Image (cartoon, rainbow over all chains, first blue to last red; front, side, top):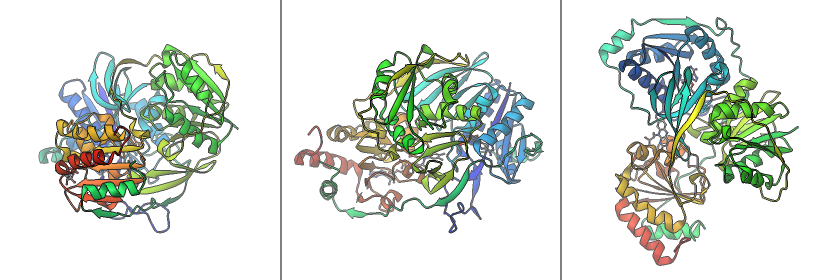
Length: 249
Length: 317
Ligand SMILES: Cc1cc2nc3c(=O)[nH]c(=O)nc-3n(C[C@H](O)[C@H](O)[C@H](O)COP(=O)(O)OP(=O)(O)OC[C@H]3O[C@@H](n4cnc5c(N)ncnc54)[C@H](O)[C@@H]3O)c2cc1C
Ligand SMILES: Nc1ncnc2c1ncn2[C@@H]1O[C@H](COP(=O)(O)O)[C@@H](O)[C@H]1O
């Protein structure tokens, strides 16, 4: 079976972003960019399915600027087979991403789409669910473990109260949570090999999707600053302070 | 114009997240209706009817909704969505699971995890792990919103809304529930506790993590954790506080053996008072802590317990 993995190029998780002075957004000039960490987990899971003989092809898709091809290459170096880059300089909203991914699914007919649960830049947590709905498929979000059976996937999900296991018919969308696996580092030979793997290029227009943003971002601001407070010298002083602050009674 | 809030519950009790979402909903559009979809959940509907500001409760009581699976929730919400101009759900793992499906089917971009309603069509939400706050304006038409419930006070009681039964929608038959293993705890829920005591990798083991229990019990506090502590298996996944775990905003957040990575801060920096114990004076947690103690936690925790006991502090002292 074919597995499709959408990967997003985002600000590296170690970077502390700064808001631009004109409040138009965050400053992304000369900031390190990487694959969304949840998407690395998705790529890893797809590659493991292939290694176990459960999947025969892993297709990587990224929607973004020309540099998103680098993100696809990283996924190919981890073991993906080929890539599709949907080139756009507008940062599409999750709904538009889901529509683009639907158009690709209609062409590629994967049996499983493995997405990240959340892109760590916009923190939307929407795309996989939207894609599943647009396809009329089932979904299993926040996957903690994944087991592929006959025509169905059994997925333990990380939920607020603990773990919930669901069985979802294939084709389906599964979104990854942190504990699903530990992604591998690509080896040098695999990085070299990945350079020869094909990446097809498309545009939103090719796929018949309008990616014009529908929400208007009025401004982007710094959060309420929270200054560091005081250092106390002992547990007893700490308790004094917490009693004074009225939070210990 | 009317807003619909989708209730969070476990078929027996209404989760407080619902009343908090009602507060956000009232600022977006009113009157507010609440949809309770579940199985044998009439008591939940009764509780929802008592929330002030709720004009009507819709009750969809069917085995289809017992686990609030995303595909069946999509169907029942869509069966009534037409008449509402705003649909809101709490940004719990349940709400995050089903609501984007509804948005996609309505062809509306969802606005996730709002923390403030600036105007009925304008919202604030954190992005980049809370390092920036985005103010967004929704387009004309329906609004589909998830609400970070810690940012809104629960609506008061005092309502007396009628409960109207809703027929179950067709079963899409795409997924089924297999099993659930829920963390059992006598303690308050993380997201609504007045005091949260969280441990990190510094605790070093599951046994050591239990050192926090005595203090938590004494204070009536919930116990949370950093990702590192969860990944290491000290505690279950539902303890994780942070950008991709739970957002909490208690009166007191006690961070013990936690370095304070931005992903962790994202989930707790709106707490009223933050106190941190860490042996590394350079730990970033101290940059947000109102009170910081540089000390080995294995020395500090027993001392803290003794001190609380000595002074008779805490609910169960
Ligand atoms: C995609 C992504 C999502 C993430 N989401 C989250 C999230 O939701 N929540 C989250 O918490 N993290 C999240 N993280 C992880 C985050 O980046 C950090 O790795 C994590 O928060 C670190 O946990 P920690 O502070 O317990 O561990 P560490 O960073 O290892 O810190 C341990 C601390 O304990 C102190 N310590 C050790 N021994 C003692 C002692 N005896 N006495 C006192 N102090 C001691 C040390 O000085 C140190 O400061 C995420 C990361 C990624 C990439
Ligand atoms: N521009 C994009 N290109 C490829 N995949 C994306 C893109 N945006 C979102 N995704 C996928 O959808 C997941 C959830 O993103 P979001 O809904 O934006 O939080 C990500 O982890 C990716 O797997």
